Amino acid sequence: MIDRIPKTPPQINPVPQQVNRPLWSVMLPCFNCSAYLIEALRSILQQDPGPEIMQIEVVDDCSTDTNVEALVDYIGKGRVSYYRQTENVGSLRNFETCLNRSTGEYIHMLHGDDLVRPGFYAEIQHVFSRFPEAGAVFSGYTYINEQNTELYHSNEFLTEPGILKNWLLEIGHAQHVQPPAMVVRRSVYEKLGGFFAVHYGEDWEMWVRIAAHYPVAHTPKKLALYRVHENNITSRYFLSGQSMTDALTVIDIIQDYFPKAEKKRMYRLARKHFAHYFSYTSDKIYHEYFRPDIAAAQAKRALKIHFGYTTLFYYLKIRFKILIGYKMEKEKKFLYRPLNLFR
Image (cartoon, rainbow, N blue to C red; front, side, top):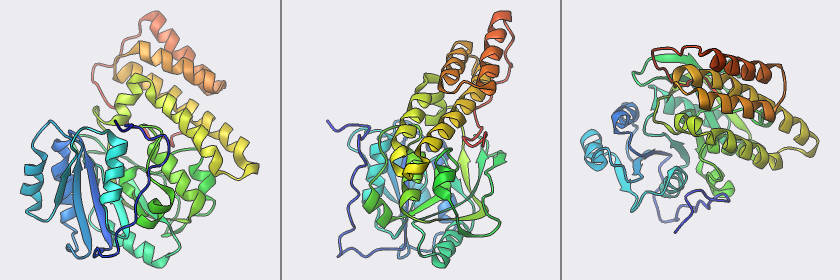
């Protein structure tokens, strides 16, 4: 049986020469997200330049929540291809399938619960045209909840489209890009391989790997929508504690991508950043997920990762709340703060 979590970057094979290649491949990996997939598809189709220019395909990891093929046929009306795994292979292997089934020059892997705004593809194509040396381009983006309510926006790195300077050192200590905003040349995946090692933070590792080998361009226009909700991988991994383990794994992996003179500094910065982030979210777990036990364990582990004022403060705060039986909020919300909360 194939490993659900590849230990090394899986190979992405070149497109056969006899295949007519479009400019775009928009690949939608999905698993039990049919409630959002309709919106995701419509957000693409409303700016569809046609099959000669854009491949659109849903890659289904054996969803059980609905008949995804029928849904795709209904929304796509023959325009959207559908592929179903023969068995549930997990998100990383599903991503690998997406990349290997893609035929376009540019790959946009839009998860089935995310969206793009009108103009996304035209803007990204324009930036690639202006900066042909770029291996990847990402736009600004907005966090939304289950009801499509905007929560807040991503950081702004440029005031107008351009190549990001010192991007490796910026992305190397904190996750600054959510998947729906990122478009990567297929040739980059062919050279560097696919996603591997972890389920939480696999995209961060990839963005750092790309930045170590290629210039990365950015447009500040907020044209992508990243959805946060209780059932996505991020939320589930917070409650299991796997998010912290995976983040530390990625920190170790990406050390090989930095110049020798920067390795120690980047290692310290990344551990400090994530320790602060998990300290902060431990308080949110206490109130919003009603799990003081998990909150305390996370705060304690964050303190061990980086001992400092912030981590000590949140650890003592959680312990004190548990000691006095501090009441949690009645209404449940979701963990929607980004990984670049503490810069």
